[in-house]
Length: 320
Image (cartoon, rainbow, N blue to C red; front, side, top):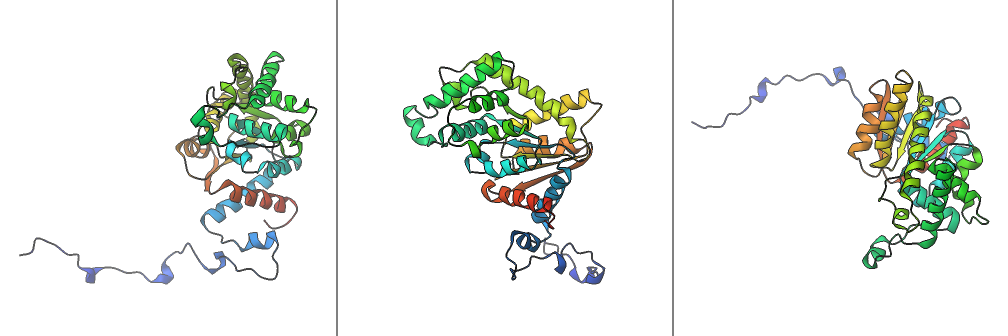
């Protein structure tokens, strides 16, 4: 007798397809291009399924929050160095973004673009001979700005924006998020990780100044978070570790001081791959008290222009 048993498929119970709920039906499918080739037509042609549906939801929440609730944008360095600063500046000008929080890498790329007209060195080539991160002007000028800011009791973001504003020439003035925030009066904070950023290896680095200004910015971020309550939006753009950790601690400070607020906000992580800290510290845990958390995965230089263009379309009265 065989030791193998087989399931008797003749006894299986099937159900009529008409009685089965479906997740996909024709009205949700993508549309091919028609005569109208505008961005609005492209946006309307996307399928109303999975990530496209989530992206639409985020756009709706940002547009609804604009001018009414806080919209916090947290930045990793890659977002700036792949050229997305001008899009963020447009959202700042339209008063959509109410607070920008950068990790140190984002601040460095933004500062270099503004002050010297270029950024992003060849790390592998510089590492072999010890010249990686050793640009004299970057380390000297950013550390001078931070040190002066510590003396004047500024936050790191405010200090770096002031240092840029005092320069006689700014080749990248029009693309700098730091400069844009200062010009428009939007708070910008920079959250350092000592030893993780190239300006910390410069002879002019002052650990006490870096700590004092970054800690002040931590307090400022915590002070801004109550504006998210009941309808605000948090976007984590490309920071896998620093900003998710800082945000979680700032959130507990804000809730401790404000009776559990903020709650009922939308949190979304945008990155090229999914990481533990953004998922848990930005998307999941903060929205347990209400709201919704999402992750959208893709290259920043493609996904974030879609987001920004769609928000602007919606603000302008189109159907995005």
